[in-house]
Length: 255
Image (tube, rainbow, N blue to C red; front, side, top):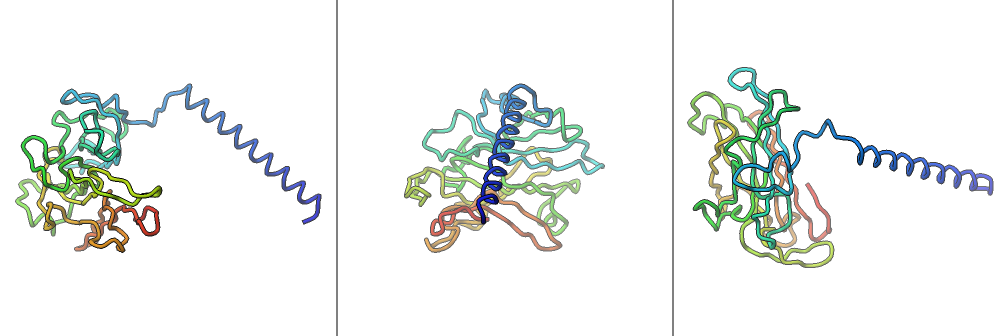
């Protein structure tokens, strides 16, 4: 590359960076001075129910009305409030909330029975279950007839929620900066069932703590740290689950 070409390249890079900085500044100014009409829910919208103030929200899952018995759009998400102990792993997980909307965009109303799922140890639950300290939402689906046939369904409606969470065990985990001890970080995946989307019953899985999927048993397995954030697809008679984990050997998150 000759001197003229190098100088032109430098000029183009500097001009691009200057334009990018200007665009970013204008974007930040708009963000600071305008509202967000596309934002559907904030923690302030959910500061009701049981006297809780929700600090973090995550993993929204939405299903449209079926055009028959259902007329409302249905939303589920998880949230954490100030009642969780500071030594529980710091995530947006905690409880699962449920809200509805007439059009899927505006008018979201928190269901009066929210939270619809709480940590398993609360309300006389089981302290030794996989989600006894915090519970998070992965996915909500309306399964086909093959799955519905396993349950006593009255009106043909059924929902399956794939959830995840951690128990009270403090485990040593390999992170990017070395080993750390975290309570509730060895997360597992479970499932719950509902006929109306608001009232859920956990299905006890085959694993020791009631889950359906656990981390790898040996340290050389890619998902030995935790399994969480499941997403499930129904393809014919087959169900496929995608989930997140942290590969301690490669020091990166994986799906």
